[in-house]
Structures are given as structure tokens and as C-alpha cells.
Figure 1 (spheres, rainbow, N blue to C red):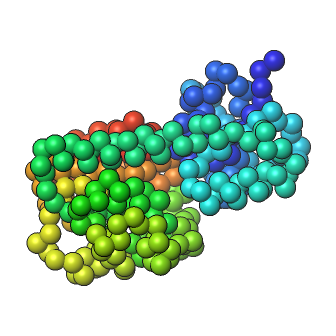
Figure 2 (spheres, one colour):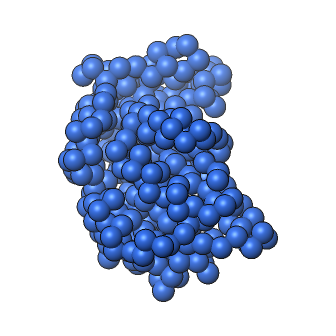
Length: 289
């Protein structure tokens, strides 16, 4: 008998998990703790292979029997929160499935590492940067892969800015300044493996660039700020400062809620006559110079 499952997490990772499992399981719907995303509250449906799925509050678990729940977020603190929520709803640990949770994350890391090795082989020089650091999970790996390069980390280290949120559309317009605020500069510093190569640029971007040399050139940049305005400004700042054969990686291009990411990238690429290419993690695209 086919197993009945929920996917906990209604963003792109949850959708990708649905792509993988919908032929082998009966997907009952998606679960999300964010009421802004619930179908009943106007959050819409998630379409997978021409079928619409409802996004539920976790309380649905009180009324429905389930064989398995796939977790659709790769952020460690959110995974811990979800597991705790599920256990409180009486879902046993053996029904919580993380087998597909980290595939996109490791695909992205593999892309970054491969780029770093290619730069070493071709002797391409320049600094590296990340715009949108959050808790430093990806930044730690960039620091490791590019351990000999100066690494600039741009972030408020406090969450979204209201100035950027008001320029969003759709559900992203309902983002708030508490989103991604569970971080701090001190916390991120402790994650870095080669702290002496790190330059932390705290503040609202792009005003914060005044803190670094305007002559700096970059060979790799990771942009992960979710929202339209900072992504567009990030591309406008970094691309002219990218060395030949340099790469900009942009996260959330395929995100169903933060649609400003795709809008910013598409606008910039059209303006500059560039192409962006998906890297195979279901989230990100890259621009090559």
C-alpha cells in the first residue's frame, strides 16, 4: 500500500522533494508554521506535476494519519524546531525523513568547491565575497574552499531591512524584519575556519561598501539576500568588479515566494546582455564573466 506523507516546508526545497517522491508516495500536502503561506489564509497552492497541494498549519497532524514526513528546509536551527514540533504532535522519530533534505545544499557546495579548484588551476586571482551571510553556514565553506583569498562578508547580521521589504510583491511583501534575524556578527565569526582572511562588512548594503577599498576585484561572489532590491544592487556592484572568468552565484532564483530574486537577476541580465545558468541545486543560478 502506498505510503501517505506530508512535506514540512513549502518553499523550493519542499517542492524539489515533491518532484522526487510524488510517484512513490501519496503526498497529503505541505506543512508550514508560517501562517502567511497557508492556503486557507490566501497563501495559494503548490503545483507539482499539474496537481495542486494545500499548505497546512501543523495542526493538520492532529486530524490525519501519516506514514512519513519529509523535512524541506536545510537550515539547522529550523530543522531542530521542526523536529521538536513534530515530536510534540506525537510523530515518532522514525517517521521524520531527512534523506532528501541536504541534497541541494551539497550540490551548491560542490559547485562552489569546483569553481575554487578551477580558479587554482587557471591561476585566477581576486577576492571572494558573500552578500547575505545569515548564520555563516555557507560562508564557512567558502572560507574553507578559498582559504588563501580575502573574504568579504556583507550583512546587517540583524535580518531584513524594511527599506527592502516594501519593494517586494506577493507573499514576499509580507516578510518582516524578524526574518533571518537569529544571528549575530559574533556568532558568524566563530564559524569561520580562517578568520584572518575574513573582512566583516556590517551594515545596510550598498552603503556598507564604503568600508572597503573601491579598487577591490572579485573572482567569486555568493549573493543570498532573498529580496529584489539588494540582489539587484549586489549585481550592479559586484559584476563590474568581477575579474575575467569570475562567477557570481545567486540563491533563491527559483524560490516560489521570494520572486524578487528572479526579477532582479532577469532585469540585470537583460540590461547587460548576459545569461544566467542553473547550477542543479533547484535554487540557484550563476553568472559567468
